[in-house]
Length: 355
Image (tube, rainbow, N blue to C red):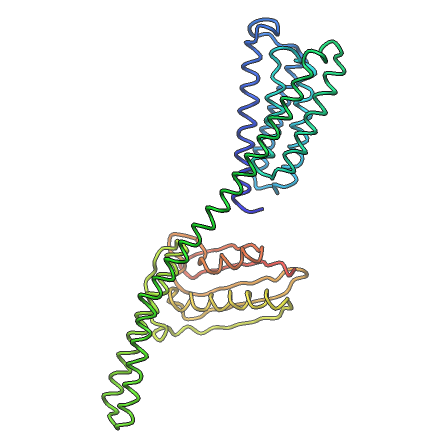
């Protein structure tokens, strides 16, 4: 599960805890339930169990348990608890309506209109069952099921509209960013490349005219200009990825010797990404590590591919943050990455699923 979806589930779990505590407080002071600070024993047991369940779900999500099974289970349990509370408190001031609405809102907050309507239908059916069991209440409070259905539809409708508006906003934002990037490349880097092309044509004329010394000087200046533009583009790309700028290092000054071992079988797209990770590891070692030796190992282990990247350089300093390009590729492939930085060098362990 992606991080932002897990964050949504965590927020829903926090709201469920707040619902448990507020329900306990309001029922304790509800005069229709026996006066101040008085609760039926079974109602108190039900509310305490709901609080324990709410805390368990929250802690499970905080401990990075897979969120989708918990989400499905919690939806069912929300409906069950709402039904029990309706059975125990059905009356003019029953809080069961709030618990049913919470179950609907929790689904609408994470899912689409179809799932919200499905939970709404389940809530209405369960509420009608409760009122039918309490035959003396069915004619008085049966209309609450209709209000619950209306509330569920509105919640699902507004949730769907919010999703549509968010999608449109992201599309407009992405279009504006693409335009800004295109303008930056057109007005800056493309103009620089056009100037370099003209200077190369001038070098060719010098060589034809046997002006070798002038041509060599011009080529050296072009090389410096290209290195400068390369550094500019690289820092611009890093700024797009919200990565801190780094000190530029000339590849020609690095004298790191690499040992590469690779033996694996994977689909073409995954194999290309794996080799790109290895290539990026070599580039990062050359740029930043000041290492004399580096080693890259890529081995297949059942249904996973294990990669290790080591060098004897200066490590990552005070942070164990992985290079953003490597971390991005590993995340795209659904793998895991661990980084160990020490004064004697850096060690990266990567595990990637083959499928």
